[in-house]
Length: 363
Image (cartoon, rainbow, N blue to C red; front, side, top):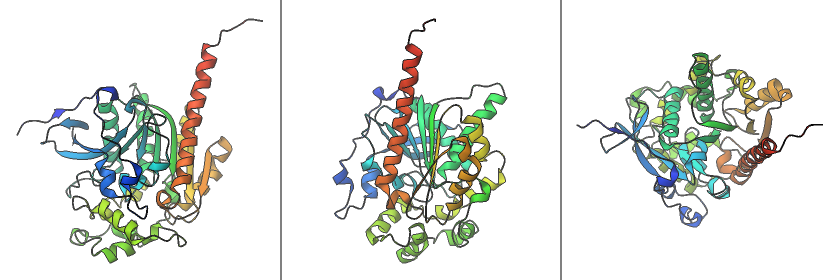
C-alpha cells in the first residue's frame, strides 16, 4: 500500500467547489430537508488521524465529510452537535445569507453523518478538535467565526485552550484568526449539564453487543430521540426518518453510544475546558454569544449559569423557545441570530479599519 499524500490546498479560488443544491431540490414535498441532498452538496476527503492532516488518495485511513460554500479562507465554521452532525444545519441553511455574504464551512466529525464510522476508534473532544484544526490548515482558512451547536461547544473550548497553551510554551497561537464565538445549546460549565439519565448517561455504558443493535427498529429510534424535541413541536415521521438516514449512513447508529461520553470527558477536564476562564481570557480579543432553548432537557442550566457568572462582564446571551433541537424547531430564528452576529463582527471590523486609516491630527 502506498503511503497517503498530505493534501495541501490553496485558498478557495483554486478549489473546485461542489454545486450548491437549490433549496427546493434539497427538501421533500412537506418541507423536510433530505439527508441525501444535504450530503450530495458536499464531498468526502481523506483524513489521517495520526498525522492530524487531510490526505489525498483512496487509501487514506479515513474519509470525512465537509461542505464548503464561498471563500473558504474567511468562512464561518459550523461545528455540529450530537447526534445529528452536519445534517442538523440543513433546516437552518436556507435562512442564512448567501455564500458571498457569509462563506460557510460545514463538517462531520469522524463517526457522524457522511464521515467514516470506525468502531475501533477513540472518540473524544480532542480527536474532534484535531480534525477541525486539520481542515482549517489544509483548506487555508485564515479567519473564521466559530458557530457551535450542542457538543460542538466543547470543540470550541478545546481549541481556545490549545491556543493559550501554545502561547505559554512560547509557540504561535496558530491559525485561523477568530472573529467571534457563537454557541447554542452547548456545554459551557461542567456543573451545568442536565442530561436525563435515560439518554447519554446510560448510552455511554452500553456494551458493544447492545451498541450494534442501537436505533433499530425505527420505532425504537423514534422513541430514543423523541426527548430532543419540545412537547409542543409536532415532529413528523418524515423528519425523524431523515434524521435516522443521516445517522445510519455507513452503519453508524452505534455512534449514539460510542460518543455519548462527552459530558464525562468535559468533567474530566473541568479546569482546562471551563467556559468562564476561557471567556475571561479572550473577551478582549473577540465577542462571544451563548444561547439556549427554553425547554432543552440537556443543557438548559448552561445559559442561566452564564448569565449569573458572566453577564456582568458583557457576555451576549440569547434565548429561543422550543426543545434541544433548535436547529429543527426554530431554524429561521436561529439563522437570524447567526447572521446578525456575523454582520456585527463585519461592521465592527470595518469601523476599526476606518479608524486606523483616519489621519491623525494634533490640537
